[in-house]
Length: 212
Image 1 (cartoon, helix red, strand yellow):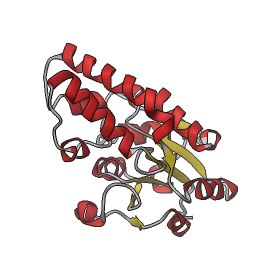
Image 2 (cartoon, helix red, strand yellow):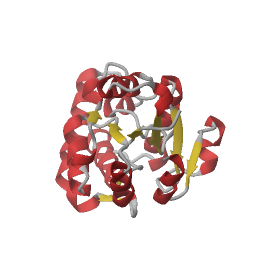
Image 3 (cartoon, helix red, strand yellow):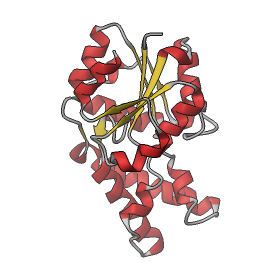
């Protein structure tokens, strides 16, 4: 069946927010722990909600909430100065819409933060549904976020593809029964994702044409 439904991750896929994410992480760890662990520690969890990532450092729910608040406050204060859509992404999103494709966003950000990123990129109107971490019980890599998006769009897995840059995205899509496409213009390379065997490899945003 032809692909009619394109589900996208946000950070590292549509928008380049990696420097903002890492700065927010460093600031939070300095504030709460007085240390600045290697960026690789945070990058391993990229694509999962903040509360999941901070649980690697503490099981204290009060402390986790405080760390999340610190992270979000810093992130929002610096968001617009550090976030940009990847070159070529906006044009490809518009092309898919012109071809009659249905677009959805599936992200581990909360809905409000996700919409801010889409507005900054100028593509907020392109997405029929937005599924954020506050819309699900089980975040990526659990299949629930993709399944919710499909339910809201009234689409079936066999006509959909989930496009993302992280292992969590590909695992989520595969578990939900949709095709998966690995983005290589984000922070992760082919070697990092190879064992997950995505259905498509996308070197540049223009490679989205091979899916449509």
